[in-house]
Length: 185
Image (tube, rainbow, N blue to C red; front, side, top):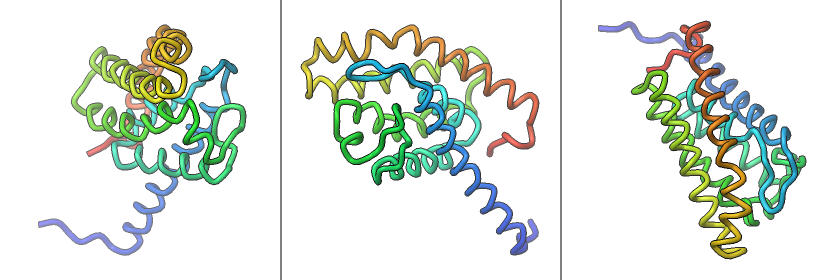
């Protein structure tokens, strides 16, 4: 039988989760701001941030961070590449990529505890592939399938591999260095 948590423990746990969600949203914004303008889809560090969060925070907190980030962006906060925000960002050519994060991030976070090393890299690489596929599908509606592939997928192949590797290293180092902080059920 376990002892019931006292109110201060509950408040502390809630505060930590709230801070993790806000910190994740901030990390996503920072990843968005680190961008190279390209048309129609800029190169950013958003997916690096996404998979680091997924690797460390778990599905619920990952989804929470994504939801806060996207809602703030939708209401005009400069959370996206080029310090943009607003409804047009969530309905324009890059919307498929952004909305894919909400599905792919928690899915990757769910898979992370079941992996080690190279498997973690594979989870992040598959996640990148799903983001590119969903983003391509949305972009194809706007500019056609071939142009969507050439402008919205092909230029990001090598970056997806590099960001998957970087996220793997960051998550593994964080788990090794701070095992109590990033341990997940």
